[in-house]
Image (cartoon, rainbow over all chains, first blue to last red; front, top):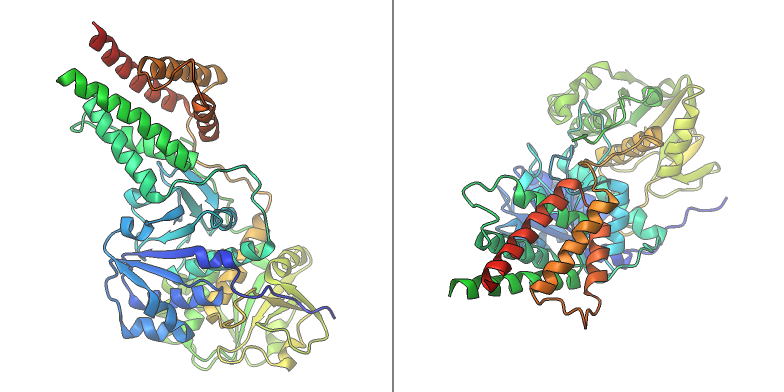
Length: 253
Length: 253
């Protein structure tokens, strides 16, 4: 009989995956998520404003994965959690209106493993009750959905982490190569800074009325997310905005 | 906007999958397993000599999937649980001295879905502490392994059920179409008109020097192409360009 062979662990790509849990209510779910991560060789956990942490329930449910809890970073905002990420992926049961690119979790994990050549891939999970808000999803370059029963798509948080971690491990082990030619992707902060710069310039241009913003900025954010901007593209676009800023400034002098 | 469409549920094959939990110690894990099954459209649960069942912990952890617990069959032996199965698949973290076939869970689930054309496919999970015994594994036609961290392959029972149920759903749904939410795409002429408009404005802005264009316009074209622009996005971007054009015009008057 030919034995099943597993790759030695962890594949380096998995060391560049970050799991971000936003506003988790039950500490037991944090522990169970850490256990799910560890079973698949993931280690980097970031908690955004958890209700209770550290907590004995988290430690108990982590079972043999308490080292992940000990190394977990607790931060105040999603922006803090996404710092330096080359790719940000939000989990959502049902993609909403301004979701940007949407992909099944299997494809999203393959893309994340490919992105780890450039930096960290961050997977973002919302609260147990309501998932990620639209504003939080808008910070993600890609929305991943786990195929589920439409009548009951309510995966437990740690169960969703388990499916993602499993798909990441499979993707990392397949040795799949992402062949589309890509330059270095913009980090989450660079994309966000571009977005905020564009908003300021559009207000100064009086193209955007902050009192009646309509859907302009969400539309632009969705466009940027879908494009998966590269560093140099961010530089070009900010260069254009700076030139417009200068023109507005000279006009008003 | 056309929403993301999910395949209608449950695919008939999933109705012919049976989950068998052998000697489960903690009733909470039975409930969490029922929830994991329901999220993926599985419904048939058989419990072989559970330590505690029914139990309030099982009901609580089942969340919205208590109907599966109510319909669950409790039997005394694994043989009882496997009655009528066309294919029996045992889960094992590390294949032991096992005479039969071993396959990664993804392949095992594909085979199980194929087997449902002939009858029931039964997935068998052992106890939390030690999994299936060699004697129990010997009753299975196929052993499925979940790829895992060799240093910590200890998936929670419900987490293992979640991964199997997820792979079953994906296998049963293969060939179904995922459509990301999209608005009407811009035509090639609309995209080209935007591109030419951007070029004129960037020259007027003196951001682009026509005598030394470098790679600016090819970079922008590549970005637009990758984004697969929609009609309304073209309108927004041309609106911004027109506003910049007006500013340049008024500056030069």
